[in-house]
Length: 227
Image (tube, rainbow, N blue to C red; front, side):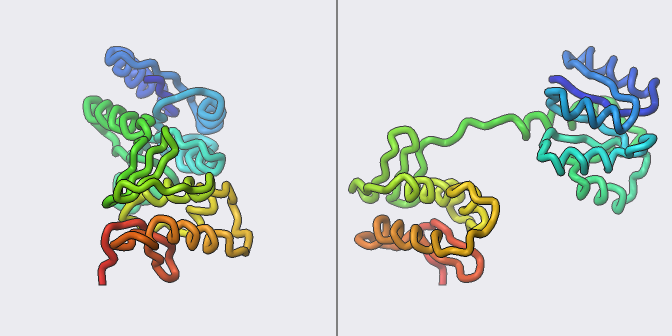
């Protein structure tokens, strides 16, 4: 792994770099928040280890700046501040984990490795199944109860998003972003129209209905519609 340590205590940073190197990782060091922010923006890091109390730009300010730029590199916050409120502040600022000083290096290493595993890209599932409804992403086919269902490209993408979140409510905002690539509400009924068309194709001649409207919340694909 390639790790960035943002720590103003040079001795503590050398200790971390040595331990990480002995564990087979490469660690760069930034001495303050401004330098750390610049390196995090320009470098390709798997995990950031950020001390909270830094001169100038503090650790939480650094994290907020990264998250505002949609930099999602996992961040482990280190701090001598260890109250519940301190930890909540660190996580709400955009940190992914929080470790109080003093700490055992073995625990820090385990947390870094855990963050890296969680952020590693997962292979996308290519065949989605809900009840007797099947969608194959690679062949671009949809069947229900063995019958082929022909969908327009936008309908296919809409169904794919819903099926990837099967059993979960998918909001209108999520659909606008993931299906239409809109990051604003166009104030049209485009979603309602496509949902209506999709429902007609996947539910009209089949039982039970799978596509449900959750009034005031969004839509969900599931096998049963609980009372």
